[in-house]
Length: 505
Image 1 (cartoon, rainbow, N blue to C red):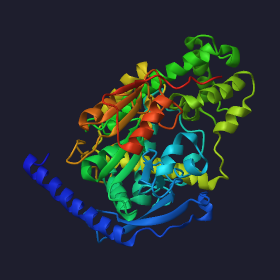
Image 2: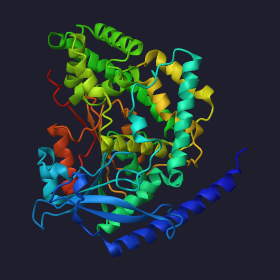
Image 3: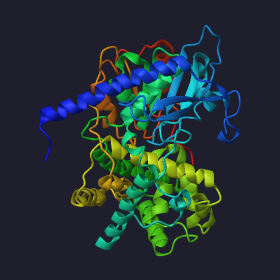
Image 4: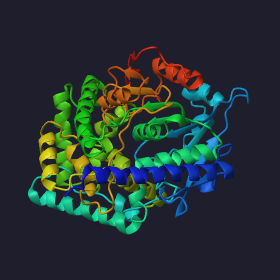
């Protein structure tokens, strides 16, 4: 039974105050020691002039003198003069489980979208706790993790569901076995605290932050915990920060949005039937998909590509329209008789041990953070009911997503109550950027954060659905992001931008 509200309220505020003290202590230490910048280790793939370093943080902020881990950071200095410099711009690409370490390469590779910002800012990337070079966690042997084919995510029977439930429970146990010491501390609030310690280590009084996808939730939590430490913040493709959505409901909402965007892509494929020959109506394209799935289920293509692997490959099209043409082309080749292109694209490469370790680590962190951030339904009945219902009209992703998240139902480590995201004293205007038809972070998420952060501005890219808008060439968006990060100014009201160019076949 639940503890009395009063008792519960007290215990959470006690831990949060000790954590607030702990992060102050850790930040003061980090400010004192700074970062010892060096050339990056050769095998990190980050060439000069990018430099790398470490920031020490406590595993548990309630115990700032307890066990420590090191957070890997990297940077490239601003390209303008000392007078142009506005400090560091920190970046998180999402996940949870994504590494931000490639962010400085946007400067070294001269990505034109970032030219103006690079003049003013050092570009700083980091691996969040548990990710990459920052005490990476693991749930299963990486070579096992990438083996294919996996079970078809769409169950035909109760026996299929039982098999998937067993796999999910085994995965949760594997996380506990391999990384149990870190799991209770793999929360978004702790990652936000780490971000504040990194800010201090950089010698920055306030944080400039660009967060994409899950990085928007990290930004929202940071802004709630440290409103007075934010200088400028851009959040792009927004996770709905409502406590009711984190994380079970957010994943169900994704399934609906993925289906919408999958339908958008089929329409584009049908329009370009002269190039791809996959059907001249969305219905015919869907028939080809059903046929492909059935063939792969009956006999995995090349011995390795089954329905699960197909969903893994094809989901990049609803995610990013930059993948539309490539995905259609590989599929088109398959239908024309060239199956090898599809196999080459999807088959695991067991010789790529570093890549496989990275994929496994990303999935482990994704699971650990989502399971630790919030309480999940433990009753299989709830999962079965919700996903069966959703699958009827949104079959593209629903069951695949369910199995990916199901380890949270049997998670043995502590699960928190999500933070109530809101404006606090000193929070400046935050810039929110969102495509209207985003699959991974549905549009309502941006509207919800906009409501919660007073004075925030929302830029909506109409009739577009790419996940991650700020990295795409669309002057209506790019110029406003530049203006905000360079001057702090936003438009006097919310803005609607026309979509970026539709991909060409």
